[in-house]
Length: 142
Image 1 (spheres, one colour):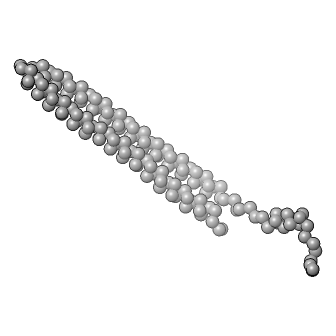
Image 2 (cartoon, rainbow, N blue to C red):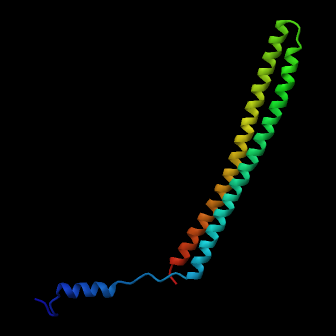
Image 3 (cartoon, rainbow, N blue to C red):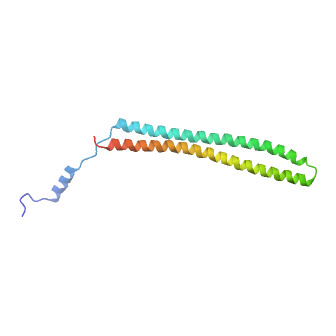
């Protein structure tokens, strides 16, 4: 038999509510500063990506201009051959050289894009790790 008073459902709820503790509110200044650093990191990553895209566009334009110039010169050289075999040989040589430059140029542009993306992602990853440390400190015991 029970020595104490009989527990009712209302008393159980009241006891649960009295035991319930809200987590401590984080320091709002610290939270705002962390958010500001997040935005700064995102802005820097966007700037890196934009600069990379601009560099790729500039290089692409340079390659296009160079290709047009080379094609004009090559067409003049091909038309100067006397016999059909010389013309065919020059055309084959031109095609091989053009293909090799195209592959090299594509690789260069791909490398530029990869570098830009890698730099931006590295910056974001670094900030994410810092943010996780900050959240852990904010929510940790005081």
